[in-house]
Amino acid sequence: MTQIKGLLFDKDGVLFDFHGTWGGWAHRMIVALAEGDPALEARLGEVLAYDLGNRRFRPESFVIAGTSRQVSEAIAAELPRKDLEAIHAVLVAEAAATPLVEAVPLRATLSALKARGLPLGLATNDAEASARSHLAKSGVTDLFAFIAGSDSGHGA
Image 1 (cartoon, rainbow, N blue to C red):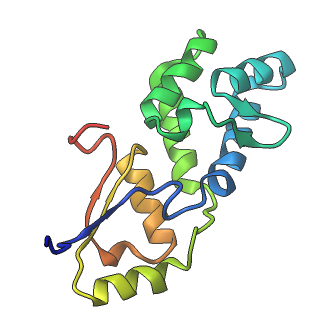
Image 2: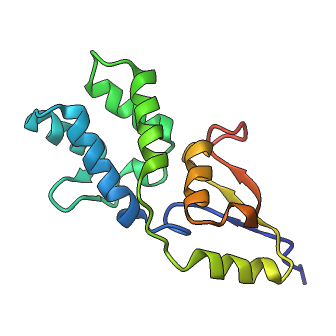
Image 3: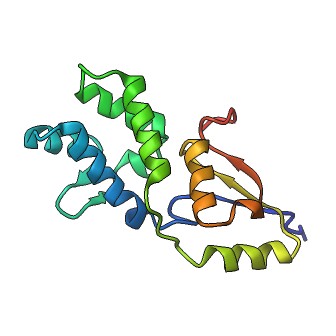
């Protein structure tokens, strides 16, 4: 029998409620990037498979498991006059600042696991800076022995 030697978590959809956290972020980003153009808002929503009316990603959305770079590239394809790096910087900064909805009481849950001698890690397709910001906001960064984003050098 193999003994569990540690736990590696995904961030969105595991530690944080995906739609509760990212539904509002996507809406804010789409509206801001469309600059008052309802047709462009609709196009961006379609590209991201995002339901603007319900502020939720549709189940087929690549955003759910995609990297922040993939999201930036998809948006940039619809905004040819805007620089990809500038779009990506805005998305990452806004992601780091977005309000979070914890899936469970994180501090208590993760502390209980760590108290059992299990090292905790986080691997996410989000940017590492956003992941660290989110863990810090929830007051749980100190519980993790390993934190990696899609841009940390390990791949998506």
